[in-house]
Image (cartoon, rainbow, N blue to C red; front, side, top):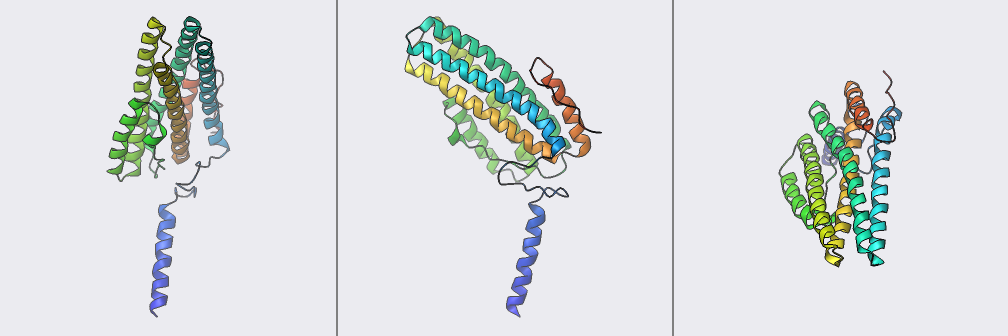
Length: 243
């Protein structure tokens, strides 16, 4: 009899956990890999993801050219190319921050549980972001609400993007004035790009997760917000969703 009771209790626990770890009627898992999207949601996600990835690739190529000029001891040309990279960085920053602000606006309208992917300071290279994200990791441990943790993560990504852009511009301004070719300065440029690329990728993962949790009316509003964002001088457009 005892083993029967224990079996029934385990079965009840399993059912409860099954419902807790789902997103509701859609039955999408909250953890383990990318959150799956349907055709309509993919049509919203893919254009902005492709635009961010394209701009990040262009930025990386431009910075690689600057490193090549520096390696050839052409410091003035190297810093001229870095200046071009700063322009590319600014365009990408505008898009990434625009997406982050969109996410922040739509989190309060999400009634179902929002999946949270933990961002680790171990993955970053710059001292600025490593120290900042350690603070985020501490705050994340004391929040139990998934929605609050998601909101904290979006704010962290936004602040990290702003901090990194400020550090990059300061380093580039000082480096170009002195035509600095030191390993320390150029390592910082490398670290800044690595961290910025990571922030952009984490923002896309957060976007994908939140999009999967939106009710139908929320999807429509988010699609309109993102269409406006993409129309500001970028190369792809987002299709209208089906009514």
